[in-house]
Image (cartoon, rainbow, N blue to C red; front, top):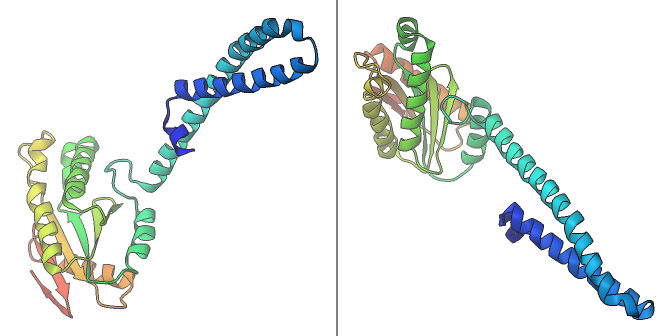
Length: 243
């Protein structure tokens, strides 16, 4: 079945028509073995022509519709799971993916990220410019995380990243890459005089800790990063915070 689905619509249609031809010709052979054997060759040719003329357009049409429907289903699923501006997971999908990932063993971390002074940027340059910054920041996040990590736009200019099987060193490296690359966003979107910075709060998960508890600790670290002047990373581990 998978091999058939991997074929082009033209190849699928040809295969269906070929099988229909084989089936119809076999039935014709059986039928004419008992009746009208003198007309066998003429009727086998006519049957084949009819099957090709009628079957091929019908097979191609319905298979094309099936391909379109499957493509639409994939696109609808993608749209339901992702943020249309950044291409990252949306909030609902993020929580679903994290609830599955957090059951795994080993260390893990959560990064809470906020683009600094984003409202001022929107007010100064307009929402189109703000959208460009968000879109580019989504690219930055996607480039900095691993395949098994869960990254999402949680709302507005807030982003979250769950790093499975990551220690504090891993989390800090990911956070610092994001912070450094965010500084290049302004020129990249045509805002040469704008310095886009981010504040990042990191929390390391203790055994048995829920996602909500982990996010709360990361949020506290994020708040501390803003209080300390923004454009920095503050982490929370074992009951303490550090920059």
